[in-house]
Length: 125
Length: 125
DNA sequence: CTGCATCCCTTTGGATACTG
DNA sequence: CAGTATCCAAAGGGATGCAG
Image (cartoon, rainbow over all chains, first blue to last red; front, side):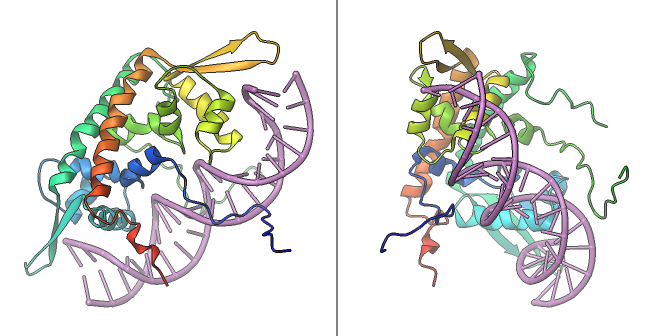
């Protein structure tokens, strides 16, 4: 039969969800953090690494590449003896800041309202 | 066995990144979509299921529970013969809409600016 | 200093089937 | 209709080591 038998695997047809798609530019672990930490100006790789302690070099590198590809940040290699690289938000990249800020504001409200933001177990060392 | 040998696994200390933490309330696949689809009023389980075609019942159910626990949505069981359940945004839940909207706006700009939002590479050999 | 390659493990979302 | 339980597979991130 010409009909395709799909057991349970499909090539993942593009999700026709515009909203999901439009928000994909901040996808990936720490992506919002990276953007956030660039809000006050250029920052070097190692600085960002320090800004976001839990991030691994691999992930930071990956995120940086993605964000650059998406037109959110710019990469500048400084011709210093030990090569250093600066990353900065693009024009449009800076427009993300207020949006993130709005989201964080709501998130903060949610927390301070005595609600259980499913982390009542924060009493971790 | 009472002992577990951990080679390189650590309990992953809580990431001290406030921003990540403050945005975690929209974590999980389709979470933003669910919120978004409730923006115009109450919606039933099966309606949401239809609104967001790619979502599975399991995930929708999970997201709904999480969002309720986080105080973003409310669940109302309607005493109809076939039991139906309505979900609606809470007061604070509605505050997320503008934030999402801001994010989506930027995302849309990013796309329409002729940039490759990491999908220019579909022409992969 | 940057950043990639590898390996491995956890997470988590999808499919399916079943219950109230 | 609403939701849960299982199983499964893929994605993605962390650690480490190496390279430019």
